[in-house]
Structures are given as C-alpha cells and as structure tokens.
Image 1 (tube, rainbow, N blue to C red):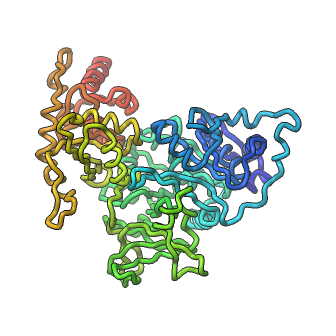
Image 2 (image 1 turned 90 degrees about the vertical axis):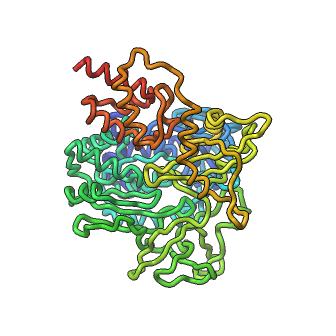
Length: 589
C-alpha cells in the first residue's frame, strides 16, 4: 500500500461508525503478519479468514498476503460439515477469526497482533521475498458436479492484470469510495477491496444494512457518498426500483458493475440510468476459475440497450477463444464453448490434480509451451463486431441469484439421505425468480418425505442450494435414446406443485387473524411464487427468497398501506406473522 507511506492520514476504511486511516491499517497489518510469522505461516501456506467486521477482515487478508500465503474465506453460516471439508481440502491449519473449523487452530486478529515474549517464535519474522506472478492469493470454493465442492486457487499474476485494468476503466483514484457489498467468499470482493486500496481510495462497509434490504442499501449508498458499486445481476432491478421509489438521485455514484449471470435489462432498469446519466453500467463476466475476463460498458447516451446484454470484449491480457464442436475456432455468429487463456486462468483446483487437468488444458494459441486455457462450459458466439454474447451452458451447471450450482452436487447430496432411490435436480424460471426443484423417487420400504429431505439438505448444503421444492415422482423419465429427460419433469411441474401443496396443506387455524387480510396476503405470495402458500409455514420453504421478498413487501405496502421492514419479515417469514404485523401497524396509525 503505497498510500500508507505517502499519505498515512487518508481514510482507507469506513465501517462500524468509525474510520481507519491507511497508517492505522498498515500498522495493524504488520502486527498481524508478525503474529502469523510466529506461528510458521509463510510462502504457500493457506490461512482461513472468518473475521467479523470489514476493518478486521481487510487487515487479516493483507497480513496473510504479506506472508506470501493465500487466504481461504470461511463463512460461519455454512454447514459445519462443508466448512470442515473446505479446510481439510485446502490443508488449512490456521484460521484468523472466530468459530470452529475442523482440526484448524483458530486465533482472533487481536490475539495474533498482541506482543509476544522476546524470542517466542520470532525467528520466523524474516520478511518473505516479493510476491511473484505464480504465488497463490486465495482459495475460493464453488459447487462441484461430483458432490464435492471445488477450491479454486487463484494466482497473483491474473489478479494484478485484473486490478490494473479495473483502475483504468473505472477511473479509480483517491476520490473513489467503493462499497464493500459482496461476501468475502465471492471473488467479486477482491475487485471491491484491492483496486480501491491500490488507488488510495476508501472502502465503505455495507453494514449495518442487510444485503437483502435494497431500499436501505440505496440510502446507505447515498448517505456515505459511494462512487462505485458492484451488485449481483439479480439485485440490479430491485436496487433500481428501490432508488426510484425513494426518489434518490444517487448523485455521487459513478459506476455500477454487475456480474454473476446473464444480464437482462428491461424498461425500468434503462429508465433508472436514463434519469441518472452520470452513472455508467458495466456488465462483467468471468467464472471463479479466471475472475473477470470480459466487460460490456453501457451508458445512458447509448440507449436503447439490448435486453440480452452481451458479455463484451476481453480485457487486456486475456485470450478468449470460441471453439466449435469440431475443436476449431468458430467464425462470427457460430456458437461454441468459451475457452480462456492468457493472464487469467487460476493455478487450478486446490490439491485436486485430476479435476485441474480436466478443466485447465494446454493452449495452442498461448505464449509458450506451458500456456494453459480454462474450459468454461459456457456457450457463446461473437457478433459482427467481435463482441461476445452468452448463449447458455453445455452441461448441468446453473446460476441461482448469482451463486454457481452444479445440479450433480445437489443430486448426490439427496441420494445420501435415507429413503431416496433416485434424485434429479433442475432449475426453472429465469433471472431473479430462478429456483431449484428436486424430483425424488422414494424407496418403497422407507420413503423420504419431501419436507424431511429439505431439512436434511439444509444441514449439509449452503442455503442457496436447498431446493425451493422437493417433489415425489413415481419414476424418472428418459428420452428415446435412454437419457435423463429433465424437460419432461419440468413440464409436469404445474401438476406436481398443486398436489404437493394439497399434501402439505396448512392444518393450523387462522383464529385471531383477519380472514380478509390473510387471504389478501396469500394472494400476493401465491402470485409471486406461482403456487398456493400456507398460513403458518415458512415462506422460504415455499419458494420465497431475498429478492422476491422486496417485491412482496412493496405490494403489501401498496395494497394495505403499511410498510413492513424487511428484517422484521426475515425474523418471522409466514403469512400469519405478516397478518399480525400489518394489523399491529394499522392500529398504531
């Protein structure tokens, strides 16, 4: 951090109602790095990060990198079994933060930074050599088709190239105020944190705002003077609608970047930017195995925009190859798999040479005999200007609100539950409404109940991988050539969902609740979720998620004249609780 030496008084981080200067950050990083050195952390070590608060997280990550080690983000909200697997797979023996992570030692940043007795492990404090292009920076886990998540080990060279490009294209400098929105376990967090600090700008914590509360996020962006914001594609439209409803001009905001899945822009999104011509939109693309590799810039003066936004042109240093079914480079207009080479492929999957060799393959068009390229599995084509357009997948990987999900991992987890003879996962609906469905063939002797299945999966999988619906079928259909026919299962959904709703009908009474109000709330949710809903069952178990909640609460306010805070809803996500909340707030009015 050159800024720490040249301008230590400048603000590096704003979080928890306090500011951290570059000088303060540098001193904390040095103290934690010394503590890591005393515990033997050095080149190619992998150290977990499970800290609370943005300042502690940034200082811990920088200290790990100062030791030429790699950091492994660990979200304590993930199931313990998954966290234990991640630390074991990455050979992570030390975690900075709080909680329990298998056999790894867990130490807080404060303990690591505390002075130690003279000579107590301090022989390790010799500063390591400068980081090289091949040094690993982080290990981030993604869904894996075999039922086991894959840990992507990303190297320094690719991230330096990405940072250099972003500083230029987003005009980042000491006036930059970048909101840190993404969880640290998302590779997007790197783009929020590191270019900002390299530019001498300021990181603004999203907290105390919940990521799912888009109106409060709009207010936070406005009140803290944020200039740069990175959102999941699924959050862009709700953010735009919330800003319009609040009549918030967002006058300091210069750039919104989105990534995670195909960007679709409707009239509401275009009007948001048309009313705020000072804000540019960047659609960025890149799998975890390469980070961002292409971008498409959109500005108010180029409207109307295509509804299906291209993923754009490769950033400098990246080789993007579209390979057709014959294995040759495809001409413009012909779809093919996107392979990515140059300064972008990760080192591979951590401690998994077999899967690394499968996806990271030799690059005949690269520089030198050791050049590699990553097989994305994404199908794209080039338009007449050479711009890349996303056309889908060639496998069973899907995106659920920005999270990458391998259907095979969900199916394998379901087959591990007693009472399941066969399981097939699929995704239906599009955009922010996209959700997972699990079709089950139960054992005849001890069949698994769909409700029990979802509970069992929630104990082993991240929340975004738990299916919105678990449906029982007599058999798994196949096509004429004997292959699994997911399309046939999805066509049967309209019949299966009402049957499941009837089987799971709400037995609880509505005594004490306003019947007219209950029916109105059920109508709102049934319309949104495209299925009947119960009164006292969790709406999250019936298909609700963080983004359609905002739409529902807006409709409730418009219809009943009462605003229900999103965080209150998350505490009690049922129709019955909503009816009580609406009644209570109307009585107060």
